[in-house]
Amino acid sequence: MALPSPVVNLYTLSKYDFYKKEPKIEKDTSVADRLARLSFKFLYERRHEDQRCRHLTGAFTCSFNLLSIQEHNHPHLLLLQIGNTFHKLPGGRLKPGENEIEGLKRKLTSKIGFNFPDRVPDWQIGECVARWWRPNFERYVYPYCPNITEPKECRMIYMVHLSGTEYFAVPQNLKLLAVPFFELYDNAQRYGTIISKIPHQLSRFQFNMINNNNN
Amino acid sequence: MALPSPVVNLYTLSKYDFYKKEPKIEKDTSVADRLARLSFKFLYERRHEDQRCRHLTGAFTCSFNLLSIQEHNHPHLLLLQIGNTFHKLPGGRLKPGENEIEGLKRKLTSKIGFNFPDRVPDWQIGECVARWWRPNFERYVYPYCPNITEPKECRMIYMVHLSGTEYFAVPQNLKLLAVPFFELYDNAQRYGTIISKIPHQLSRFQFNMINNNNN
Image (cartoon, rainbow over all chains, first blue to last red; front, top):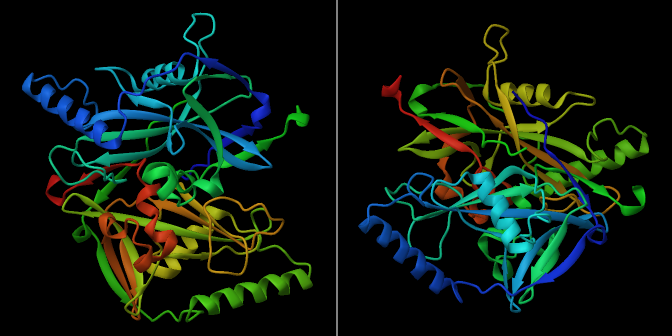
């Protein structure tokens, strides 16, 4: 029954190509805005008896992707930076009835890929890394399902296995940053609850550092 | 490549039998004592060119087990309490050359089982949940391998899948406590860095709450 730890190959940033694409307007300009929109949609759906967006135990399901690389043999996470202070993982809400993995790929392409038919990247979605629950329309999220009848949101985080051949197309108004694990670790003040806990949740993975001159 | 989240069945505490056994004397009475012993052993081994206890990239490897149950449909973790304030997971250091899974089972039996030939429990060791590294002979541990040549200790945490038929034999000087996830969550002050982060590391698991009257 005991399973080996999953292995992830990490290539250096210089293995990848980077492009710019048209700016991506954020739907919400603050956390309060986002919570207000979530609450509105939730109540709207209930009124119209349409709960198709709630995939898991009645909560809205958002999925996010982890893209990892290495620099100086230390793992780094790729984060989208909005303005100077806000960071997020590429992802978003699943469509009604959408398969989770298809939704993750769609969101990755829309956030950091080109959607031209001949350039859609072949993302390899891997292990579920974490799941966070929002019991109420508030800032607080928890890594376990709260004992209430209607949790409001479930955020799932998945590992993406990069092969060193992908490219990234970053919206002009955003930056794609490689942030080392030691910078993220327990740094909730800068990166928020969810991102600052990713190093903990990845500790079971075995990272295989691949240097460009090895290939 | 995308893998489904592992499922863990959680039974209520009343499914299990509890016994007392002879007291188990702690090797160390404080964290400082433990670090001093670790340091002594490390240097002793180096002097005698015997590094057989260092299983993983040269660090001493300790393995710990997670035993989970449910009460009121909320997951709980079984922790050993020493005195009134100190909590730990059942586990310990692997022997030279010992297989990890065999070592985990041996430690579980020695800590909370009977070692009589006809009563040795059939522990089901499951997924690796976390790995923590101690770069120096100090209190600080990190969930990623530090960029130094000789990390001093690696602690691995594994899920144990209980079937509701096990028994626990608790040393008279210890208590076996079921602590709810919401109590552990981010409560490093009471439970320490490692235990307080377990709810984060288990968020990817699907807990299947089994009530006694279902069986």
